[in-house]
Structure formats: C-alpha cells, structure tokens
Image (cartoon, rainbow, N blue to C red; front, side, top):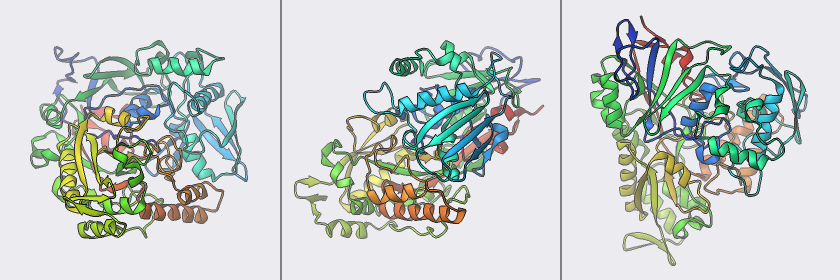
Length: 572
C-alpha cells in the first residue's frame, strides 16, 4: 500500500474557441487556439509532483506522483474498476502460478514498444526489479522504496529471472495466495527501459543516488524513452507540468494535443479557474458547495476511491513530548477515536458527501474485500465514554488536560494546508478533544512537506492528518501489510503488534477463495478493534469535469485512482 496518497481529485469547466479547444496556462495565455485540443487539470491544493521515476521513494509516495509516471510508463499488471487484472491494459498478457503459488510465470505481450522503437522485454522487467530490490534493502540507502514490505517485497522473492525475451519467472521463498501476490507484488511493477537507466551496472548504490538526483527532473534524458500514452514536455515549477502524446504508443492514442497539470494555491483559486474555464478537469471544494451551480459548463460527479481516511500517530520512541509510548496503547487510540465526530464532519463540513468508516477497508467503492459484518462503529463519537476509558487507566484531568504521572495528553497536530474543509475538520477535532481532556495545537504545512515530515527519521512529529486519506495502490489486495506490519516502509508511525502481524501474514497463505476471504475479514475485524491509526470519515471526491470533455468520468478508475486521458475526447 502506498502511503500515499493524497488523491488527485477531478473537476472543471472547459473553454472553447471555435473550432478548437484552447487551454490557457502560463505558456498558452497569449494564444487563441492550438493545433490540437489542450486540457488543463487542477492538481490538489498546494501539491506538486516531485518524483517522476516509477519506483517511488517512501517520502514521495503520493497519488500525484503516481499519476505523472503512469502517463509515461506502463504497468506490468493493470487493475480495473472491479479490482481485477485487465491484461488489455498491461504489459503482461498472462500470469500463471504453479499449484503452491511459489512460482509465477509472466508472459509479456510483444506488441508493446518503447518510444525509440525497441521492444519492452523481460530484461527491462528484471532491471526494474533490481532497482526495487536495492531500494528496499537495509543500510544507508540514498532513498527507500515506498512499497517495501508490501506483497512480500523484497524478502519473499527468491529470484526474478528472464527465461526468454518475453517471459519472466518469479520464484518465491514461500508458498503464497496467488490473488494476493499478483495484486500486491507483481502489481507494483511499473517498468523502465534498461537501456536508458542502467548507468551504473555494477554499483547499485551509485545507481540509486543518480536516480534520486533526477527523480524530480522529468526533462532529463532517461525520461525521453517511454512506453506510455504520453511524453513529458516541459514544466514551470509551482505552476504547471505539460505532457504531449507519445506517437509511438501501442495502445489507445490520445486525441489531446497537450495535457497540462496546474498547481493550485488555494481552493478558492481552483474554483475560480473552473468557473472561468481556464481549468478543464478539477474538483469542487466543499467550501464552494453552495455555489456549485456557478460552474455552468460542468458536470458534477462524486466518487469514492479504494482506501480510507485516517490520522497517523507516531508510536516511535522518538516522537515528540514523550507521546510515542502513549499512542502505542490501544485504549488510548480507542479513547481518541471516541472524540472524533464523524457524522458532524460528514454533514457539517462535507455536505453529506461521505460515509462513516471504522476499518481500513472501505465500504465504497463496492468490492468483495469489505466485510459486511463490520457495519457498526466500535468506538462511536462519545466524549464521556472516551474520558471514562482514559480515567480507567489512571489518567486524571489536571487544569483541563488529561495527565498521568508527569505525562500530559498534549501534542501538536500537523495537517495539510490550503483546504478550508481540512482546516474546519481539525478545528472541530481540537474543540471536541479538549472536552475529553486531550489538548492539541494545530500546525499547518503544504501536503508535500507533510508527507516528508511524517516520514522523518528521527521522528520529530506526533500526529499527522492529511485530509486526503490513503488509497490502496499498489496493494490492491487490502491486507494492511504496507501500513500496519512491523517495519513496513509506509508504517512511519511505528505501529507494532504480533497479533496483527500474524493476521496479515495469514492473508498471504495459499487457500481456497472462502478461506482467503475469512483470513482477510479476520484481519479487518482486528484492525477495527485496534485502531492502529485513527479512523475518519471516508470522503467522496467531489469531481467536476466539463460537459465538452467526454470520457473523464467513464474511464476514471477508483481502484487505481488514475485518469486515462488518452481516452478523453473534446466534443465537436
């Protein structure tokens, strides 16, 4: 599971100048038409892509970065909106496992080529694996792969070998549930061309250092060779990132001449861009709900991504104010959960566009992975009950703050800036927790800084609220291994529980479909009880897309949380 992820929201109004669409960006404001349609997409507020290499570092593990590299590079396996492998959109044409799930044979579709005409081969897959493995290791690495710990990455993989030009064989050290392994390990592979990136064949430390040096420079030479529907064109920092079609793409080719991702300073500026038509795909800020009809050329459509919303707590010894040992207690997290007014957040801040959640697997979108028995909050909003739970473990109110010995229940909460709805949420939380005896100070920061901070070593933070949640990419089989397993790369809070580890590991074992579902549901039930991170409402993405731009809603994939703009068309 990638920790990421601040999800990309959708939305917009389209500005047409007959007979062609004009997209007005900083590089296009003085032109009246373009030779082909251009579309401007609003990025989340105060968020910018900062890692274009498709093996993401843990500190750059966001949906925004995933969307960027997905335009340029093809996945080994693509999962559709039902969370099923779709081999028509994948480099692999099929994946076959042996009877025990310990050997997987991946057949590549020979139709796929790099933009320089070279075929995508098994050697490219093995090279990409070498990078993933090296960046998932121990020691003083230049950067750490964010998917380490997911899908058995890397320790469960004994070997990844090119057995022919278009065949890769993966042998495991274990026997595994093929559904889990294909979803959560093979599903992580987004392939890069070995010929372009293999700069230090005998020194992976230097290779990783070099990759980091150009990870945020998509104009660097290695990015010129791609196999996805788009190529990177140009960018203006903190303003816009421009992609153009890859004419050599072997899939469905784009009819859009330029795809422009635009930085947003605030939700009000993003809404103004929608209303004026300078942005074509974006999102409706909850604060603008009452005036949404001002977007006269748009279609509003809500969607739920495959994930959950939470507050991350730092249980590491290095947490500030001695709070690590406090947060590591399950009863503390349960009492804190009782101070979160999910119904008020949904109705009062998000206009009813959300659902109450109490586990790491969402009830929306509908998948077979959600346990229908978990349809009742274990720890509903109840300040008195939360207070009583703390007091039963020795805490006492002292000058309005819960205190145990010398430890005060007082800490700073860092949260994503720029969104009034997020601000309203943390302010409501601050008021409600104060009634429970939990005192917090609010510290806002841009989302990119927030992700970097709550992955900091040493910690240097106590609690973090993204406001955007976590989505299951690339851990499409939602077992919790990347978030809650001891030592997982995205387990920045340091949560550790041997029972949780065992339940997660049980979901990996080979089993019948019924047995696999039972194991997954057992993990979900325990996670709901444990509250490893604090559950918040799962909020709908309030999408806006122009009525003149077709295919945005129908091709959007809530499982992968990805646009497919090569299927978008401008209405003539």
